[in-house]
Each structure stands twice: as structure tokens, then as C-alpha cells.
Image 1 (tube, rainbow, N blue to C red):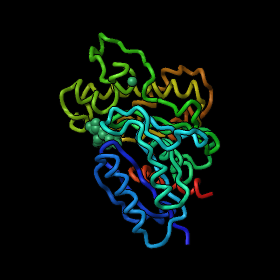
Image 2 (cartoon, helix red, strand yellow):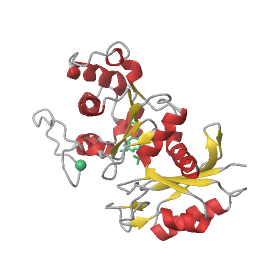
Image 3 (cartoon, protein in one colour):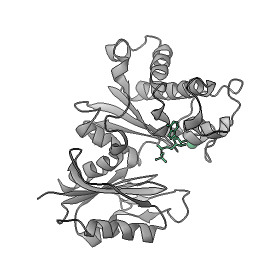
Image 4 (tube, helix red, strand yellow):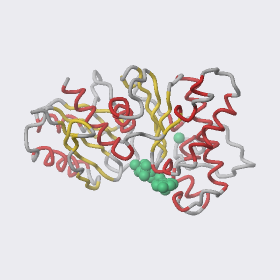
Length: 294
Ligand code: ADP
Ligand code: ZN
């Protein structure tokens, strides 16, 4: 019998589950991400309690990480500001204790992989998966393979035009100030308007500014990567009214330069929410486990 284990390693919580696919996914188990020693021990204990020996394990982690299989640092969380977590090796202790192949990638690459196998990106050879939550991240899959390159893309830290007359907010990114994440992630919305993003009414001017920044980002991703679809998830994208605003502004910004139906009459299918919703994270880890086992 084949059974995989998946962990979605977040900065605040870990979500673990056993399964093989969306229609065969056990109950999710969550616990707080505390110290590395304690958290890794809980993950190991959870997988050891599986009803049958696991065929593989996948970890989809907050980053930055080293996801390059041939790198000596494969499986490590790199320069995170989260106390105690910089340079923590996640894969080795889990592989040693469980004795099974362990797949590892960023949380967004994991979610992108899940959408590719089971969700909104089935059959696409090139697409972008983007998340707008506590941070902004993105992954690119080409023929089902996440782009790694140096380490992995940092699609939230791109620079977008910042009109300080329209938006005097300086941005929240500790590295760049007003990069995309600094201007448009959930905490930036919260600080700019002094209230949590989820409490801003749909007609608040903050949302047209948000759609503007996200549209600028999507236009840049389209220009550089030529994706067949851009999937946008994360807490902030629960504001579904953002989708029509982003689509319309993307079309305006491109100004007819790229003449394909996907960006014109079919733009509703081009810029879309994730089909797997909140399950994409842990399913991404299951997808990484399957790949490691293969
Ligand atoms: P994380 O990025 O930590 O995994 P989320 O994707 O839920 O988790 O992102 C959390 C951020 O998204 C917070 O800044 C929060 O204010 C914002 N957020 C969560 N839900 C909503 C919502 N329904 N509408 C707008 N913003 C939201
Ligand atoms: Zn930044």
C-alpha cells in the first residue's frame, strides 16, 4: 500500500497530513512552529504514528530555502528572520529517522505542483502560482518542474512603480522597504490603513491601490515568463472582488501588446484563484513526497 506524508512548514504553524491525492487525504494535524528541535521532533513523531510505513515524505516550507537537490545545503531554511530558524536543516533528520525519500521545496512551489497535478494548472506547460498573505511569494513551473536557478525565485520582492503622491506609505519590507511585498502583503495593508485587511470594506480605496500593485506584478511576471495562467491565492486574495479589478488593470497595462485570447477575451481564465483552495499547501507537500519517491 502506498501512503505519503506531507508537511506544510509555515512560520507560525505546521500542517501535516497523510494521503496520496485530494480525494485521498487524511485529516490535517496542526501545531505551532516553535523551536526547530521541538518542531522537527513533532513532525517525526507524527509520521512514525502512520498506520503503514510511508513511501515518501514531502516538506513545503517557508523560505528562503535551498531546494536544489544536488546542493550540500539541500533541505535547509536559509536566512529567515524567524528566531532560531536560520540555517536549520529540515530534511536530514526526518530522512534519517523515517528512512524514506524526502522531497523538499518552497511552500509556493509545493502549492504550484499541487495545482499542476490536481487543480487550476492541469495540462499547462508554463504557469505562475502566487500567494498574497503575510508575505508575497511566487513559483514558476515549466513542464511540471519548479524553476530553482540560484535557489528559487523571490517574486514578492520585485520593484513596482511607487507613486508617493498617491501612496505615501513607505512599505514594510525590512530589506527593501517598498518592494511589492512591502507595499501589498497583508501587513502592509494593515499598517497603511490602521486596520486588518480582512476588515476593510470592498469599496475602500485601499482595494483599488492593492489591485494596482498586484496588476503591476502580474504584468511583470507575464512579460518575463510568458505564463499560460497566473494563479493567485493567500489570505488577501479571499477578497474575490480583487480578481476583476486585477484582470482589467492587467489588460490596460499591457495595452494590447501581447495579442493572445488568454489576455483578451479569456482573461477570466488566465488570472484565477487556486482550485485547491486552502488545501493546496499540504497537497503540495504530498506532491513533493510522490516525486521524491519516484
Ligand atoms: P500566511 O501568509 O501567514 O500563510 P494567509 O495567507 O492567511 O497566511 O495570510 C495572512 C494575511 O492575509 C494577513 O495579513 C491577513 O490580514 C490577510 N488576510 C487573511 N484573510 C483575509 C481576508 N479574508 N481578506 C483580506 N485579507 C486577509
Ligand atoms: Zn522586499
